[in-house]
Image 1 (cartoon, rainbow, N blue to C red):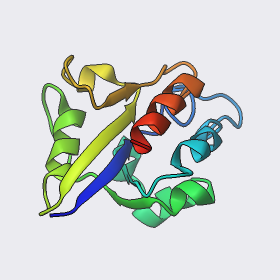
Image 2: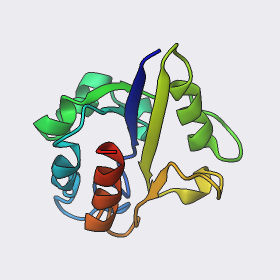
Image 3: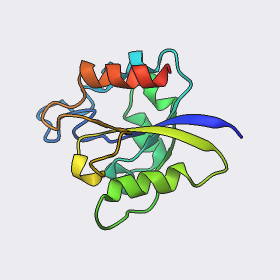
Image 4: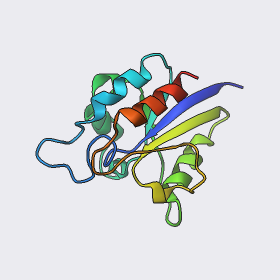
Length: 141
């Protein structure tokens, strides 16, 4: 059985501050390039943007190096406690493949406290070098 690594990617609070000003949308996306350099990991978009944009449109908003890694979005919305976590695990375990995953997200309340797969970003700034290094370390293990 094959093993794959997937990064579940939120947009708001990760690729830009939760409340972006001016032209700040996706202003932090370029920080992720170095994390993926020596990895074959894929990206699945877990952002709520998936409800209002097609996969092609979501990919078009990302720098080329990230867009090429995007393979899917998580599915239907889950209502209730730790909704994002349940959306991700439903996607991750829907195939006959062993999926190792990490989530880049600022909405920590959407995950159980014990979720070691969450790389929590600061919603006021988006991803920073500390989170990029955590991701890079995991991707190259």
